[in-house]
Image: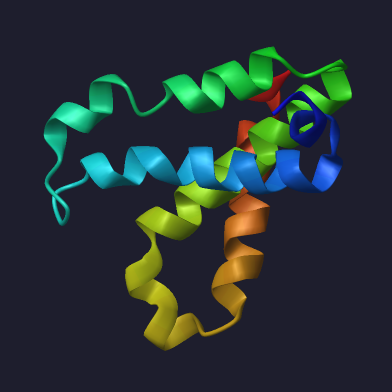
Length: 98
């Protein structure tokens, strides 16, 4: 697992996935109890970043993953622009990662 965390591609994919986990606590999946532990993988990933820049990137990608998962219902009207919207709004999580 250590080698995978050293790879920027694996780390980015894990940040996207870890960021999407808190969206399961929203009303549609209705896993309210998941809200208590959903941020832990994302926090551990950001905390284990080797540099501050990597931590900010993990925060950005995690925020994008969260927004893409939470706003999946916009897909019929935004099509591929939902990815652009998720990446742009994910920038709001960069200071949190830093």
